[in-house]
Image 1 (tube, one colour):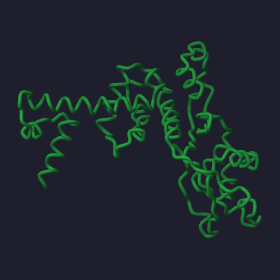
Image 2 (tube, helix red, strand yellow; image 1 turned 90 degrees about the horizontal axis):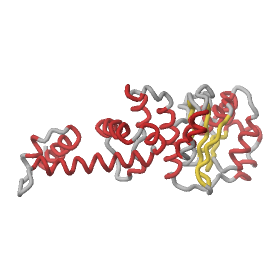
Image 3 (cartoon, one colour; image 1 turned 90 degrees about the vertical axis):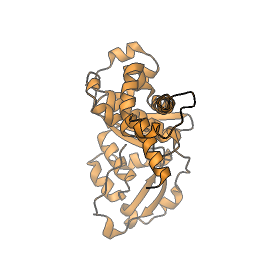
Image 4 (cartoon, one colour; image 1 turned 60 degrees about the vertical axis):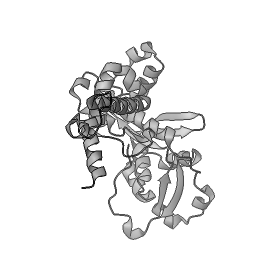
Length: 268
């Protein structure tokens, strides 16, 4: 193992696992103890990543308070460090941690709120993309239409929630205690679509059939399969609405032999 790699491993163990033994032996004191120097870096690491999570999950932060959020964030950071330099993309698994965090059990809707906020954060930071060429799509022969597969806009997200998290999210951020107190937690499940519009983030409820149809399309399933998975509903109207809103950016024809192959559903 190279000296540099050994140093990197030692610093990692110090910052994340709080094991300073190896790293401290490689640091000159020079007026400040090695452990204190390492502590500065550790505090900077956890402070920066906690702030990044707070920016992505503002409603979660308000729901649980700063102290609780910091404890949960530190647990998450210790298990999942960033894999890239852009912290806007950090925090994808925070909702899963909250779902398994015993201290969060008193707020059962917290993981769903976090999933919504992550989808919103993704939408905010997604790249721009031009909508697909609708006239070109309309020119496809009727016999081939069921083979059309779509590519969703990068900002598009779909989530299923067990609680009315859209109402909770808005009420928390608007500090609307009256609305928050009147929320019926049994007003669920919900099927939500999240999209970035020129005017901001749009979060809208869908019927289950429309959501399943949309989810299948976003996962790349051909139109014929997506219609079957919708199990009813006016899919023509739903698709027309998606095209008008620019929710798909490209399309292609799927080979007939591949139509029956299983594929994962689109989800957040």
